[in-house]
Image (cartoon, rainbow, N blue to C red; front, top):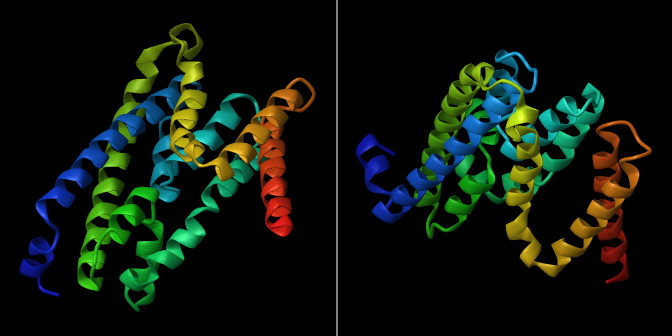
Length: 228
């Protein structure tokens, strides 16, 4: 596919929607970098995490566990569990990644909820391929640039607790999951996980209530699947 075809394929509506999503993600990325640094992390930590992980929900969960006193193992596990949803997403857009190993590895790193959603809206293979790479690349650049800006500005914010920023991580995570709660099949295990987390918080070290909640929600889904 030549470059002229590359830029002709996406329609204006799709390009506009991708730009709006990039803007929204940039705002969230800037808050992630700022809150992580104001909470006590060095600026390189959220920047490196964004480059290497590139998954907003998992990054918020992992850093939230660390800032609340949890260990690295709990933080990594929380991020991995949240990122597990990207595995079927990868299968859904596998045909758009091409056959070369380096291309597929790069494409796998750019798989996000938004990129997959825009890709699957397209009718033909060429359009899906272009939209995936366009959306994935734009999101990667805007997210990482915003995280870097937020991280560099984070040291000037002072005490995150005094500003109420310590509540930002759970608030953002809640905003990320709210759309999924419209589905009853997702709502029940989410509520079960919330109850488990709240009940376990007084008794378990920081980070472990989140893992207990994820385990409980996953167990409910497995049991429900067997029942059906």
